[in-house]
Image 1: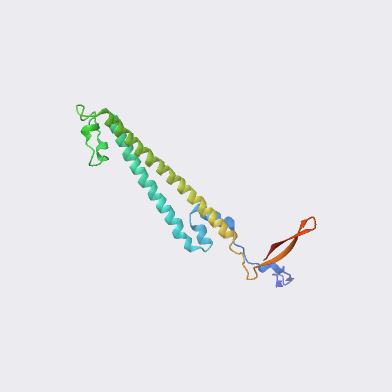
Image 2: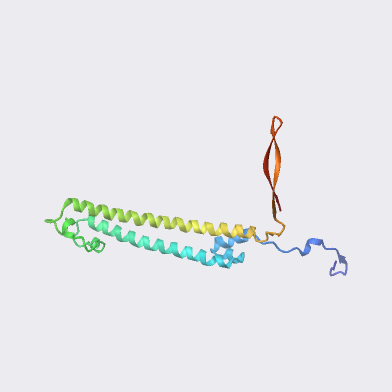
Amino acid sequence: MSQTKEGKEEILPADSTMLQSHSPVKASLYSAIFPGLGQIYNKKYWKLPLVYGGFGVLGYSVTFNQTNFSKYKNAYLDFSDDIPETQSYLKVIGGNLNPADFDPVLYPDTYDSKQEQWFKEQLEHNMDYYRRNRDLSYIGLVGLYLLNIVDATVDAHLFDYDIGNDLSMKIEPRLMYAGRSMNTLGLQISIAF
């Protein structure tokens, strides 16, 4: 019972002191707005290094693959043109390759057309490799972002879940009817919550 301003007594319902429940919607929104915030809301602080570590690794992977993709793309474009001043492809060749064997622009007298074709295919292959890995890293970032939201939502749903000590499983033999006046022996499993 409580009193109002007029001095009258008011009867409050028995559940008016009910605890505020943990909201899965809030956890989802927090994680959607800022990854990891839903885990903080759920008081699962140990998951923060996993979330930010995953974003860090995937972010580094995107940057690394984009840098190498750009390097090989420029090398391919420079190798394919007929301008002698564009030579960025010379920066990507290893120490065991000689440009005189495959470069028709700088060394028109000594190059081999098969070597030229092979080198162009290698540049294309490396360019495609890094593009694919960059794209997969972006997909991984989106997947991690969604997983972060799902994890926060599931944790919020299970936040108040009570696992009592009265869980039990009982296994006992049972005689079961098999038809035509035949019985068979089996096991019966009973789970009590």
